[in-house]
Each structure stands twice: as C-alpha cells, then as structure tokens.
Image (cartoon, rainbow, N blue to C red; front, side):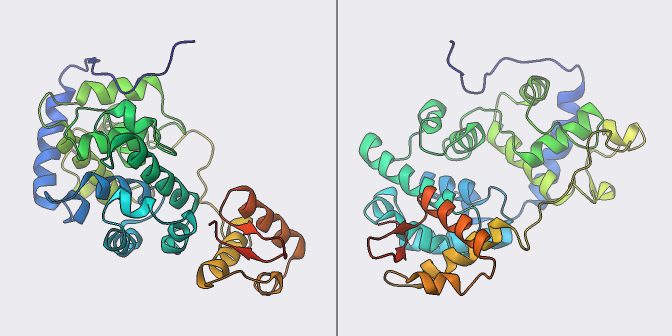
Length: 304
C-alpha cells in the first residue's frame, strides 16, 4: 500500500480564476484582517500549533483567553511536557473536546523527545505528531514556517465551494476535486498569506448560515452568486445538539475533576447528573479516553 503523502504542489489549472480571486481577496484581507496574537510576527511555532488545535470547532472569542493563559503557563513544549497530562486537561477548562488537551500534551512530549524541544517545520514530521491531521500539519507548516501547502479548513472549503464550484456548501468530506481547486489557486509566493486570507473571508463574510455577500470582495465573480444562490441540494445540515447529551454530561463530570485538587469521591460525581445510566456511560467514556482515572479506593481524578 502506498503511504499517503502531504499536500502536493502540482497545479490544476482553472483558466482565469486564480488571478481574478486572489487579488481582491488579498486586498480585502490587508484591510479587514483581525489582529490575532498567533498571527503576529512574534508568534512562536509552538504558539501557532496551540492555536490551531484550540481553534478546531471552537470560536476565536473563546480561544483567545484560553490561548493566552496556556502560553503564559507553558511558553514552550518542554514546559508542558514536564507536567502530568491531567494538568493539560485542567488548564483546558471549558473549551470543549478535551481530548485535544491530551493530544497537545502528547505532542509536547514527542517534540521534546524527538525534535529537541522545537516544533518541527516539515509537513511530514508535523503529521506524525499525536492527534495532528492533514489540516493542522499544513497550517503549522505554512503559518509558522512559511511553507507552501494547501490549507483546507471548513471556512476555506466553503469559500471555494461557493466562489469556484457554485454550490452553497462543500461536501462533508474533502474531495480530490476540492484539493485540485485549492492547489490551482495557491500562489507561488506568499502562499501562507493567501491561505489565511481565504480562511478569514470564510470566518467573517462567507459564513455558513448567513453570508454577508454585500461585503464580499468577490461578489461580482462568485460562481454561487452568479448562479442565483441555489439552495443546498444535499442532506439537511443540522447543528449539533448539546443539552442533555452525553457530551454535556461528560463536561459536567470533567468540571468536577478539574476543580478538585485531589481524588474525587464517586458521590460528588453522582451529584452533578441525575440520569444514572447516562452518567455511568459518560464516566466510563472519560476513563476509556484517558481523561480520568479511577483509583483503587473507587475515587476519580484527572490523569496523572
């Protein structure tokens, strides 16, 4: 079996599209870009890696204070690697999807053990870190080290689906056609700036539910607009439920463990969720995922 390779640099030509989209989007970004700390010139590769993991499925407004607190406590991978994984889960707070905290901790230890404490610059090395997928590896290689890679997050995929393919939403999973389109638009020079500009356009203007087309710099050349903004013809897109779900239950239980400074008796966990069957299922899931440990005396704690 042939090993899967990182983003290629081969070009898939879409005549006339590349230049017509690049210039207005880059000009818009120069004027409208948000001043985010992980985009500043003094941002470290570690800070950029932390931001990319925190920003997965989490809004910028929630990430900002968490990112700043994380970097104050652990400004380098070695600082985090020296702590037990439970401290990463504690510091993660209420950002959600807390396995990301364990992944960051595992990344820090791997970076120290195999890369001398420095975040690696190559896509392939980044991709080999725990919990790092194609998007995160490409983003860090691009934004931290100036590499030329296709960076396809949800926002970028939505912009390209509308502007080039003329559809309201991209496919649920990234397709080969999407990657070819993204590769065709990738400039030879300053590719990271292009990647973040398209990402920003998707986050601020070409949003999922209520796109602000009047503010879009490519409104006059967007294939979706020119086609009359056709509705999505696939399965309905529904937001994820939260209230009453196992995910909410897990969050309640984990909050008790985070706030404690020692082992927690089972009764303290039982008190925060009424449904015993769901509570036990959620608690078993936390233990199985490595987010909690059960001790010999039946008490629970964050992983040590």
